[in-house]
Length: 135
Image (cartoon, rainbow, N blue to C red; front, side, top):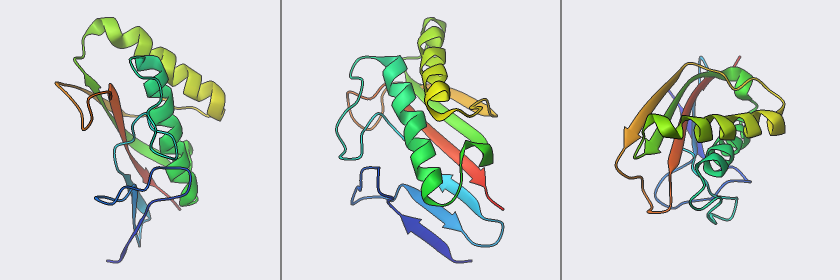
């Protein structure tokens, strides 16, 4: 089964991995974990969980748009939060609400929230993975 790999415009273009993989057939889309980076790879919202959540969700939307999808096509999200505890729920929710307001779509999806010790770079507080199915 052929797989298209790409780093779409509007997202960082890392050398070591691709942001999006699209498998032909059922058009399932598996996104690399999206973090609080702008299109040039610069940090967004350092130390601010809500701002980082918002940017990660916006990056998910950007990646999906690059392959003709949207959050309407997302079937599963996995969210990794550094040093998770219930006290961070309000900031997590605030970031999702800000992304919802910006995108104008329903971001409530099946989700797995996983607390982790750290992520790939020391300033990152959250990473969001998405799986989508397109027509």
